[in-house]
Length: 317
Image (tube, rainbow, N blue to C red):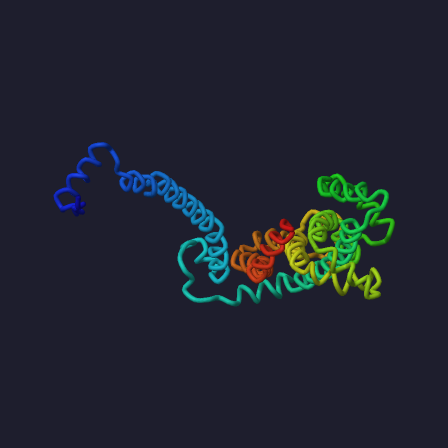
């Protein structure tokens, strides 16, 4: 008997497809339905992105517009400030800036602030990094107690220490002096600096310090030549935060620094606001205000990437 191979025709294939559809055997249709993206989640993500971007744009508008208005007003005349406060100046009146810089003694306040903040920032970073390194890398009795003392200094209101601090500075003959104000700024900024850098030094690899000890380096040399350069992102971040806090500090110099020749920028701005308000020199007042804001804005714009890098590097190990 001979067996004959019968090939399926197109009609038979169509019939089998119809039968499979009737039985519900459509694997491609089912898998395609499961593999297709869900439009609900896509719409939710789009709405969330629009909402978040809208909030950021609104926040940026609320922050940037007062700054731009202050800069614009500093180049106007007093008459233009009251007649058309929201219009652009007809021309740039740079005499407002020169008058505030010389007649209102903003140059003296600016120089005193640079001296105080510069020395206090260097002292804070030096002492804070040394204390944080020891607390982070060495185990000794009282380590955690000293660390929590620094943490407690962050929660202690500075206003409660003003009266005893005043008498301490007076007994040390440091009242109404720039060196006394520098020491107070350092003590005021140390708790946050130690807290921040302690967590940062803990993330640094221990093997590098051990390799330095094997090569014969002392603890001092290992700290300054090995560990401190590795902690540069954290140092930059904490330096920016301390700079902003010390530059805008008003309460401490008001109580501890009442000498006219030693006043800092925050005190000078208050005195300028009072005097220029009586004189009616509002353009000079806004010029002095912008002078005080520019260093802070410049520091943040220049080092904003380093601040973010330092914060994220200190949070990850």
